[in-house]
Length: 121
Length: 121
DNA sequence: ACTTGACTTAGAGCGCGCTCTAACTCCCAA
DNA sequence: TTGGGAGTTAGAGCGCGCTCTAAGTCAAGT
Image (tube, rainbow over the protein chains, first blue to last red):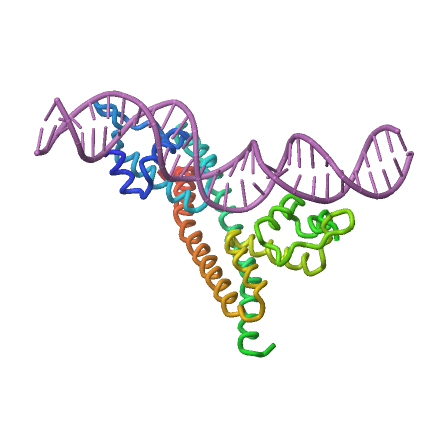
């Protein structure tokens, strides 16, 4: 798979894929063809797809790098990986709760304007 | 009220308060004392408190500036203000939904690691 | 032979939202 | 009178996550 194909498939740009590699997010640098071009494996593509989902959920690059390092270190990092993901899950849940509570003031203001527009004030 | 007091009260820094003013977020530039120092009114402080809540909910500075402009223009922008806030509310709700769905892969992975740690795989 | 296009690298640039620095004024207290 | 502390300004710098540029290589098509 070429970098363009992986880009297509994951929704990232080729630029971003190279950036992710530089940032230490790949399990290993993708192998190169004779021309020096990256040849991504199916496993690479799957891994990148996972990265995009973690990113979408707000995981910072540094945490993704730590996660990648754990995966590279093999089976005896399962506990650490689980802990990392659980910490992230807690962050996401906290963020959702925060947003929900921040919505209150917005709703309150909207309601206020509704009343004013209706001429109640 | 001095800038330090408003900073204290709103959780922003004095730097950020000046930045917000430059960014056009204040309803009007706070009046100055004889020494040229800003003297915030109670209304300023309330407005800034509202700004912080909108920011917390993810509203970008540009939208806050548009909102401030509408408020400055007076009563006949109620509809526009309401629309702005409703658009923002939709954004926040979409973001919450997005996060919730992004959580799925995290939960799935956590579950996977739990099983592996338990030795099921 | 020449263009086109896909790739390569190192490194610069960007948009956002702050955050901080430098140089200054002013007032007050020891 | 001298030092500290709180404020002022214009503008630089930062952290994040990309995003893009410049200059180059290589392969295929006309």
